Amino acid sequence: MQTQVSHRVINPKIQFLHDHMNNHALWKCKLLTSFEQKFLTIEDIKFVFSQYYLYSKNFTRYLSGLMANMENDFFRAKLSENLWEEGGGADPNERHSFLFSSFLTQSLGINLDQVKFEAYSHNFVQRFLNQCINESALESASFLSVGTEAIVPRLYSIMVKGMEKVGL
Image (cartoon, rainbow, N blue to C red; front, side):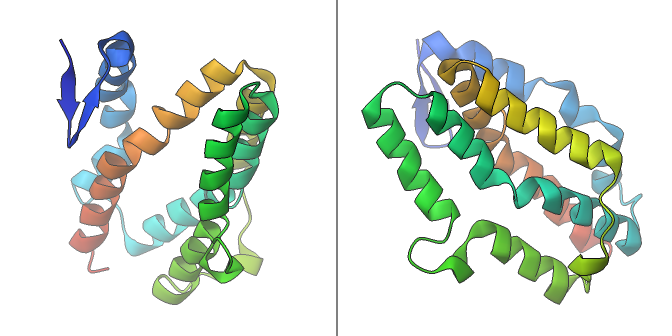
C-alpha cells in the first residue's frame, strides 16, 4: 500500500519517516502555536526571521556536506542540480538566501548588518551542518529531505498565516 501526499506517492518503505514528520512535536511547539494564535507581534516575527536567516544563508553548506558523503555519482549530480537552484543558477541574485534576505530587509525592515545571532541559532546551524557532514549519506539525505524540505509547505503556511494576522 502506498500513501499519497499532495500529488506524490510515498513508498511504503519510507512511510514511517513521513508519519514521524507529520506527528512530530514540532507542530505543537510554542513558536508555531504562537504564529497560529496571533500571540506574536511584528517585532517578535522580525526577531524569529532574523534568527532563521542564519539557517537560511547556510543551506548550500548543508547540501555540500551531504554531497561530500554521497558515494553514488548520479545522486551527487541530482544534489548538484539542487545546489545550483539554491545558489540562484546563473544569477547569484536569485539564490534562495538572497531572496530571503531581501524579504527581511524590504518587507520587515531588518538591517542584517545589525542582527545579533543568538548562541542557540549558531548551535542549531552547527549541529545541522555536522549532521550533513558527519553522518551517512542515507541518514543525511533523509534528514534534509523529510526533515527540512518536506516540512516547508506546512511550516511556511503556518508562518504566513501568522504574519497575515498581524498585518504583514
